[in-house]
Length: 354
Ligand code: SAH
Image 1 (cartoon, rainbow, N blue to C red):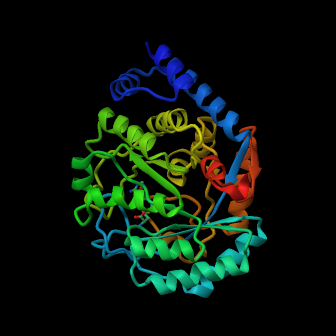
Image 2 (cartoon, rainbow, N blue to C red):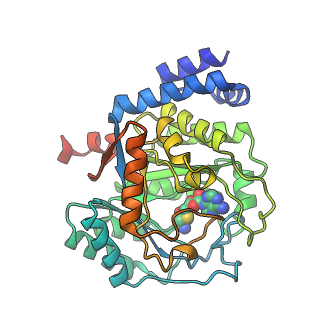
Image 3 (cartoon, rainbow, N blue to C red):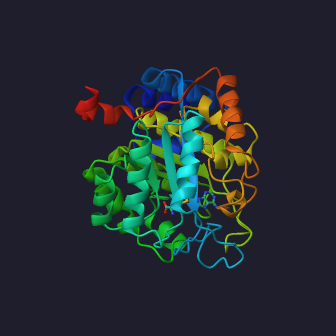
């Protein structure tokens, strides 16, 4: 039965929620092999052998939210908090540019110390100094006006994972946040014209196959340009310290299913997958992922941006990460692409690329 469902998904890029649940629940090793074969073929059909590199700058670990799973949640008083100055951020970009990166992803907790003026000035400076780069923000929820102004300042992309499409699970995990607002924010960002990234964690406590099928349907409907999928990994200083967490295999299956449901998406092989398994990112690439996000943050702050435990590469210099990841990509038979790497959907909709 799995084989029939996988083949239909490969052909139609669609299965109903019930079919996805059946597939997730009954996938055996042979089914997985077939699924990964088709998801890799689908990725190659749309993006060739390219895997895009993004330079990640974790610029602040202050956060006003209190997500139960996250190591930098507001209630964790054990984290030493830091903020990078505009100059430090620009230095990271400078080094990244020298290493060949043409996308910078600026990520932080929800830190309103960086108000709209500071953020606008950061984006304008980066775009002014490096006009051939794309700037991605991953800073959580802000109002429509701020999103609009940041777009006008030159921000190209915005990552805001929906985290889980289950309302009840979302509400349990995010005591300080609102389910509807997260989803509205994603739609707002899309309407403004950003390339938008959504995504979810796999293996959250209480998460069911039905919830995961709903995640895929939510993504199919939203049609984001980017989809971040990673395993939930417990952190000792959070209420979920004793939870089991997501597995490598389950996460790879979700990456492959996302590739088949939304074939044109940019799908990162996440650092969290590399943390679960030394070859987790390579395995994700072979299951249809086509983006990696090596770290460009200054080495001194890296251990402080600890969303989950044992996060990898916290002691490595940017030049080392750049080389290490390149080697990992080529080991899978794929090719590194250091260009801006805009999503196909965006290229189609944007006359600049016509
Ligand atoms: N504050 C920003 C950035 C969040 S951090 C925002 O709200 O979008 C980036 C992502 O890390 C989150 O979206 C979440 O999916 C993931 N994350 C956080 N804690 C995690 C954990 N314990 N295990 C795995 N992933 C985690």
